[in-house]
Length: 472
Image 1 (cartoon, helix red, strand yellow):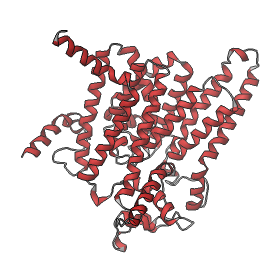
Image 2 (tube, one colour):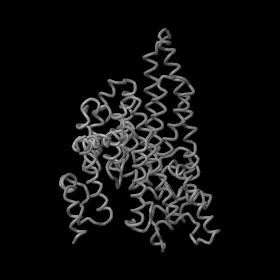
Image 3 (spheres, rainbow, N blue to C red):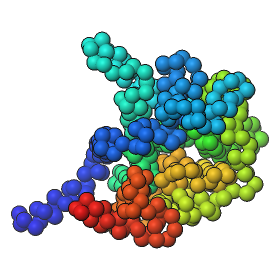
Image 4 (spheres, rainbow, N blue to C red):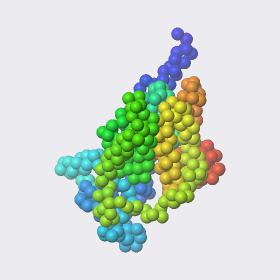
């Protein structure tokens, strides 16, 4: 065999590897993210020496306080984590107390519950090490404890990616499913929250929302109360991770109404009013199951705020009548399409997805639209400090299916598919490098991605500036 032919076959086999071993590739990618996270811990420490930062701190205090203090009094946790030395260091939000005398915590309890297994394992190992003479503080503040939250996030994100791939493979061929999954993972904000900031809630939402959609979609032909109860339980846990994601209840709502209006053959003779009545009962079962799964959050709110249902950010946090949806999509301040343009293709792909399966396409499009409305209704629609429109990471599985629809319609050849994905992955990688350099204090090399030059042009110059800085 000619050498050129052998090389060509080797290249073909390399490109087909993801299709032959999708699970191994996803796990390997997750392991690489874990290695990168480890390297960042060792060589690029965050300001203040903490591993959990931003929103992650408020999630972390739940698990540390529950395990070591057996309460939900967070003042000592915040004082230690933020390194407060004097009374002047204490911020106003810590001095103010709720009606029950607690420091407020605006974050959800779902992520800490998912972090708990690995956190308890690390706690047990540290305790065992101390018995063997290893002098490491058993207080829940050390790096190994904080790192357990980060590694838990990476594991959850990787599992969510795998479940999303499995869902996509039920509707599209394996090649389209795995390449589309990799495209959305590596070319969107999901990559950042899978490995660079895994202690935010978004890695957990990738897992629970993907699992919710998988169970719903794979049982879509079973219109039973038991099936709606299971879907409701999963929806409740979705809301437990990010209570904003309760909007995903629109999926079983559309499903039930669709079935009531368009009966299966076995119910063709059943009156419409009877079918709609059954749909109402199933939705009621789904709602009750959702409340049951969401109960831990209500209990925590009862302790912290004296009420099982509350809005910790206060009612002014949402402006339902005037959502900023246009800015959420196109602003240079973390816009969904401006920061991660691959998702625009995924949204376009919802059209062929609808043609392939109308019930699936309608339910997922409804979830995406309600998510856009809800995220746009937040006063702080740019989501604070974020890499892209981070609140849409919950829609990861929907974007995967949408990109599958786009790829199967307009990227039918392998070279066209791989080149398109490669371009978007490179664009995201360059922007991610720029963003991380800025966040680590190297603004002279990498400006913050805001404005045409800094968002569109600078990412191509930053690698050369970084190389010159390293060599100079």
